[in-house]
Length: 145
Image 1: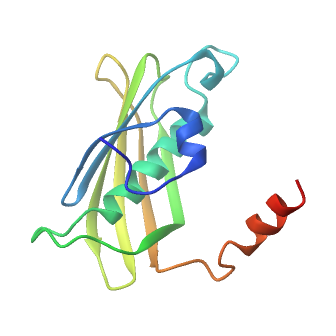
Image 2: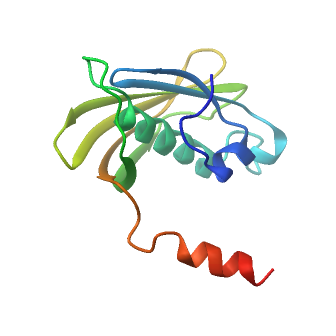
């Protein structure tokens, strides 16, 4: 399954979109050495990024009547609880719990290869048609290369 939007950071991490249906998204990543910490388990930044991305995707899923969401989302706030170390293939599931015209309230869970819950998060996301900067900063940085 292909991601609905191009996110270079997500592609670099090797995330795979597994499910994208009304109010639910699922994303997986095989844990590689470069994604681990000094203990040889999933780095907390990878765990939080996967939860952030899967909840943002859940926020962007179609409504129950199949109407596609055309806005992008940005993270307003996120709280993560780490429960145990992550090993093997990690699978994140995001759920949109509630939405308003401008906000989505989501939760995410992350399990390891054995199906054990390793982290849980909640997040609030704002729907946007575009960023106020319009990507100009990125264009200026690329123009100097």
